Length: 269
Image (cartoon, rainbow, N blue to C red; front, side, top):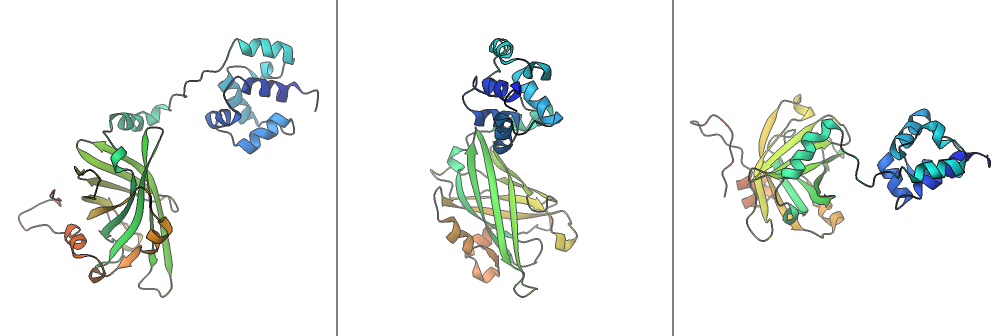
């Protein structure tokens, strides 16, 4: 289709921006697929054609017109280099990112400790990391282990979410990546040391093994550093008997409510 003006016009429109990769990212189309459009071997679907036209501020008929006419037209309508505004339903999330206090000092890797919801009396040690991207702080956590009730039955849990510093507390919200069936929230005391050390607080959740009953537990994030051997750290994760965990960790993750108390609270150390 050498006489097809579409790939020529699309390539010219892309040349008005810093890179094709940026166009793909902002339009939301896979680079490999977009390259096929530029080569003229494939035409976009109606949906993708609409996205491309909206991005460059042209109609489909204009994108298919003679190249000389199109070049003169698009040169007067250069696409904005400003990032696209987030959809309205993401406004609240963007507001939390803007209001979030200083989080840079909390980036790095952590062991996460808590009495597991699914196996009473056992402690989970998982590996989490806080990273920064475009001014937002992201959280990832991996849980691995062997089911103590089923010989050689291993499990893996992967979680992703966001971290915020709001109201003098660290908040982490994560969702289950593999099952997409749960959301967990942690609320932690901040650290006032030069490096985080450890962060202590409360988390909510619910295990499939217990009918997803809403539950809460004490949790500790033990800071490991910004650069670690993640494979070696992950090898140390799993389900443990309390006797296998350091005493100071066990003390910080005890779940106790005194007879004269009505809610589960964690005191600051």
